[in-house]
Length: 103
Image (cartoon, rainbow, N blue to C red):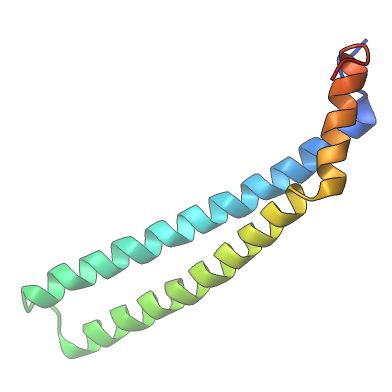
């Protein structure tokens, strides 16, 4: 016999998994954005970029910035869903049931 009810635990794990995916996506895009921005600053300072390369790099950074904003918004939305009162009640009820009714 499992410590937690299978169906309820699977649902909670799915919700947690989706949250983790959103957080990972935000982290990845944020890292890309920051590294590109830093790289551009280094290259611009050394005059190593031609005008067309500079423009392409700026467009890429702008794209990553937009994607970063979307990823952050999605991660926050998922976090809000994960921490809703209904979800907290599910967790509490599962732990109460597993510990013999003790809170």
